[in-house]
Length: 489
Ligand code: HEM
Ligand SMILES: *[C@@H]1O[C@H](CO)[C@@H](O)[C@H](O)[C@H]1NC(C)=O
Image (cartoon, rainbow, N blue to C red; front, side, top):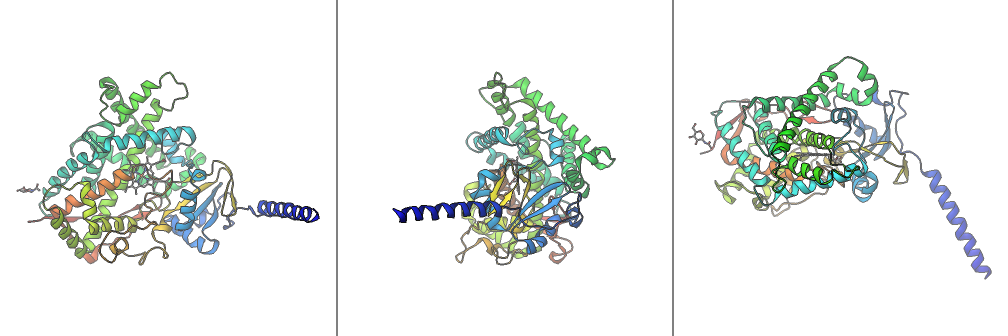
């Protein structure tokens, strides 16, 4: 009996001690102090803030606090920390941070910046709709195949003279989203389409500029100051007007039994839930989600293909091996997604292109919607959380040669495709890119069709191709080259 009491007492003490020490050890992740108000903003490399984070983490470790302006920010560095947060502790880390530029552009509505029930509803709906158009009927795969024919024809018309592929690639990739959202593609010289593309490109460019960074840090002040951000918002209003026009056309011709595209599916849902006052399927969410799909789905994918072509020009032997594999396995017929598993080398090259490019080095900001306890630290409610994808895609521990192009990263000794869990260009967990499977379909089908039909080169020769980004902050934007597309015999 005495023994039991003693044992119980010790247990109780241990618990108390354990609890206490646990609570007092729940402190903020370590980090630089920073100047009041400015925080660590002054320390950031304006052209590549993610590099500053990487350097700081050498000192402060994989989970660190960095103050950006008034905003407390926690940065997650390396595969282990990023995966542990976004996947293992996924429920805590699904929150989205209030990226002020995006909030202003979408008026606070839509999938990409929402949280809670709104996000859950829009996310589930968008995933389902993307999946439904991915299979059966005239689905995504056929749209992309169709679009690659147009792309090949356009490149063929350059008659093996040097040209900048940026515009054609934007057209092709945007048209895939146009098919999904509007149920139509545009001719590459359509004026509305051209304007739409320019607005999207300029918006992304602004979002990645130092002014964009400044707006995100001090939206209140910047609203009152003159600067290029006002022009950027003007352009977004134009984009919004275009979307609204298209939605009106859809409303006028809607036939509920056979939805033609994303907008039709959304309108059907909107009509079904008209009587539910709390429904998230309303007009504002439709317009803003459609804008999200454009802004998130066009520049990302087309820049990746553009960067991919530069890589293949720089490494002509790799280009040749890809062509050989493609010729042997599928010959001259149109490629389809079934072919991917028979083209391990091509698949590995495309993965390696995405890894090396590291297109969104800081992902989109996540957010602590409540106090989060992580690895013994406290991440207080309302903290911005940055999963530093850059640090995962270039981590010494995960990759044989993190800083150079090496398709062997994704091949085993027998030349079979080999997955690497640290391949996270689309981020990970519940908030990961909603368009991942569409994007991967596009990268594969466009790249394979291009290599079936052309050999790519650069007038200055392979050695004059610089793969470092033209500029980087929110995104790593690849350099644009005048390339030569020589038709293959
Ligand atoms: C190479 C192409 C692409 C890359 C590298 C990419 C990457 C990403 C990343 C890193 C995120 C943030 C994930 C996070 O918050 O943790 C994201 C979000 C998102 N992406 Fe993509 N993406 C690509 C293509 C696309 C396409 C084609 C679409 C359109 C169908 C798309 C639509 C979105 C949307 C709507 C979000 C926000 C999702 C949410 O907040 O729940 N992306 N993407
Ligand atoms: C490319 O153009 C030539 C004539 O300029 C034509 O004969 C050929 O069929 C075209 N090839 C493709 C793939 O469009």
